[in-house]
Image (cartoon, rainbow, N blue to C red):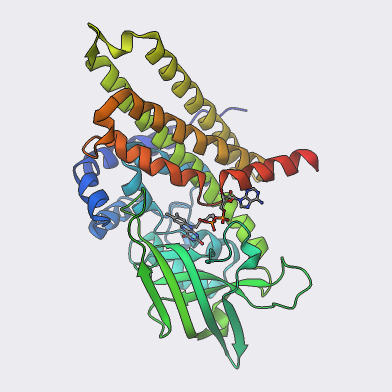
Length: 380
Ligand SMILES: Cc1cc2nc3c(=O)[nH]c(=O)nc-3n(C[C@H](O)[C@H](O)[C@H](O)COP(=O)(O)OP(=O)(O)OC[C@H]3O[C@@H](n4cnc5c(N)ncnc54)[C@H](O)[C@@H]3O)c2cc1C
């Protein structure tokens, strides 16, 4: 298999890198400390065509594949993970609409997402339903021509910013198959009965909005159902194949940033009469970081390359996801270690990288869940 990037893909990488390097570094500390984000930066990224690139051309996007979206993620995260997360998660759920939505839903919702006029989120996790999504208990009851939604969601990305949320609802609690009980329903966040409370105090990606959602007798028209009733679980598994690949790219970007910070520091910092780079203990760390980054990238390139050719390999995506998350956490840890006490201070980027990295082993399926998927595909 040839994973070399086409000329167009190389141009996408260069443009994403240029934009991120020009816009992110000066604002990263402010957004991180303040747990805020400037939406003008998101709009600028949309204007330049970096957001929602996977959205079909018919709906205002660029119609790019998995790999191109991953490449932009990698470059943004290689400059500043928190800002990369805030900008590129604004279409988190557009994939679901594109794959399973009705023609009316696609026409109504995809163009504003691609053009920086709307933000979406996808709310699955609940206080009692995390890794086991089949325990999701927020209900949607069909009454007349409407769905009436009650319940709550945890950790919804864009919860206080989004205009629309894909909400994973229990629609058929008596169904004998726990994989047929849920459906996605598209919820306008301006609906009476929707409330979102921002979650503060996150360890990392603090520029990205995370919220707890509460639904009280929230009513939406029956046609807001995404796809067929009872298909929510299988739609979610298909959605995860997209988003997990994005996370792999985020992880490789972050790990690269950690290596860059480490290299810069160990070349300049002198102890015992030599730069830290001269010590073999330092060199071994650098070698291990670079090797793991390369291996992680090759894994996700292979998975994305196959997916773009209609050969999506669920087990390979899971393998790439847990391994790249581990790579990011490992590289950030080693990079901070090489900075000594300076790395412990938030004015040093490496501290942010260390904090931002951990989410990569948690969201879109924890590393344990991913390994379970890999093992299942081996044992099948
Ligand atoms: C910043 C952030 C953003 C997020 N964004 C979103 C979002 O937009 N939408 C959304 O729906 N969710 C979102 N999440 C939630 C995230 O997907 C969940 O936190 C994650 O799926 C884990 O669920 P949990 O936190 O309930 O942990 P749990 O499922 O309770 O897991 C706790 C630990 O137990 C382990 N564990 C669980 N089951 C098993 C098992 N069978 N075998 C071995 N180990 C197991 C897990 O791996 C984990 O280490 C976000 C979370 C964060 C922190």
